[in-house]
Length: 328
Length: 281
Image (cartoon, each protein chain N blue to C red):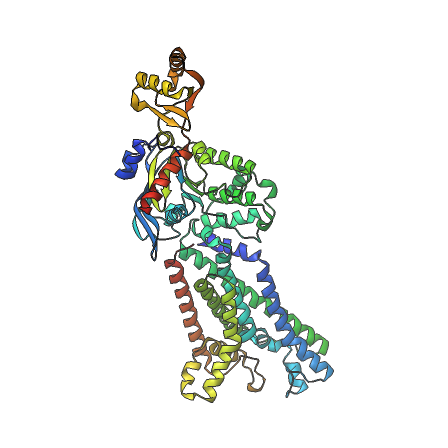
């Protein structure tokens, strides 16, 4: 992994500053978490997490397995109590019936009654939630399960169970939807459908908090991300901001002469190396100018393309930094 | 609360185990309350239900007048055990399937969900009592018609008292099952422990106390099974010589009712406190 691109400054500010208001977002904060800890004896599952989710955004909650994502989401839904820290969801406390009435969630694997049909499972939950019975068929349609709604849950495939879990989360037509790894165990087509569904959920005023360890998924769907590693939030900002500014990746020969000319044009700090190519910090629109300059200087140019860091790069950079510092 | 109660009833109505357990209670009541005694009467053979009893007494015991005794005579032991199993299933199933987290992330609070579950449990147990009573009444009527015997029914007040007493016995055991399921977060262990307690431990304790430690009789008389048996005894007016298993005259009916109510209250309170305080994984 390259160390040429440091994590963007904004990400570091969010990590160090813990200033939720400084993080860009669409609307008012719906989820506000500050200094959250959850300890199980000697084990600290959540280690001082700060988190802000704003109205109308799709927030990606990223982290490797065991990072503390599900524990944090369980706290947000009132299933477990924090050891310390402040948590506000929709202006209230987690688990408060008034908050739950406006929140839909799918935490970890979908859990339903195996002896009941999909429709009856939703009827049970709708009655508990005080949701109108008409919502049952509506959400079944939304997740494309109407055709199998009369079958027992035990006979469903994993993908169908996940979709029923999402349907259950939507029963109350909630303002805030919390989905914990909803594409887990799905085949590629199921994952694509689920991503489309999550993206649709996030349109309009509805807010989605999506936990995942699939970086491509988050990059495609989310407006903002928080990255959790070993129980700590290591970054929180816009996806684009986190990926940092774009540049160019130049493959040329001789590489030393190319570097010399590029440094002369853009300054020595703008040129780095990445797997045999030159990584150049410059606006991608200047690619034609740079290729003309290199050719004129007698450099053989094999390739020049936009250097766009994937979220994956940033993720590994941040989480490995955390692991390294823990080892130290 | 009403929505949650309706939801819990929907679950129980569609759950096969509820019907199987209810059916087992019904079959056992009819078998030991009517079939075996009546066969003994008809054939003249002795069986555990008819030993030491005259044929006239056997016939009287299966006629409509004895319907209360036959309905709830077995509640102290076997129907109580079935109720405990049902209570464990109603609450413990949520842990086994992981559905507790699904329920608790809907609208109602934890205590509302628990209240709805326990209310639904009590409703199903009331259904059991009524179903067993109806089956016993039909069996008694049938035998009375066949034997051309008088179709005399107990007084309405006795009927109501008997059925209510039987229901209290079942509810107490059902709540015990719910408590064990909450404490152990599952179904298997609570059922095992509860059934062993009802069928074995209490009888053993009572026997040991009676024979070896008479000073501890006051403790034995406070056990739930003893009070369940005493309540059944009080409301069925059973003759001392023909007491069904578990039925005893150890304490008065009033004391048995109060003790069972205390147990029920304690079971509910401990279940509620445990559910409210504990993290849901």
